[in-house]
Image (tube, rainbow, N blue to C red; front, side, top):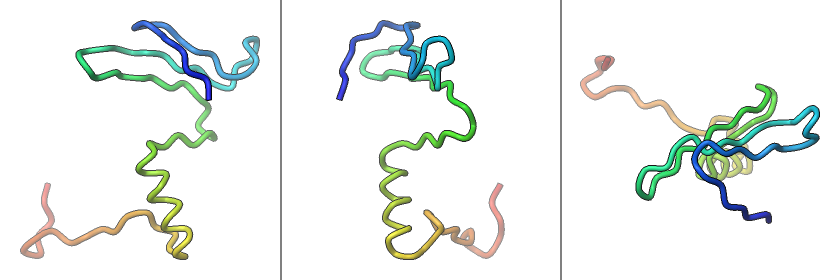
Length: 79
């Protein structure tokens, strides 16, 4: 694993610098929160770890759906 330090607005290029696979930028830092921007082709899946774990667990169970849709309370759709 590579660990680097970046300041707000700085970027990391993934792949060949002449034709990068993607770019990761530190969008903003406020307190203990860091916003990270990912610029990758649409074909590249990007998932937060908790969603990736949920997706992997559902595939092991033979369930292709990562989440379940529940009806709104009272039988009426909420907006």
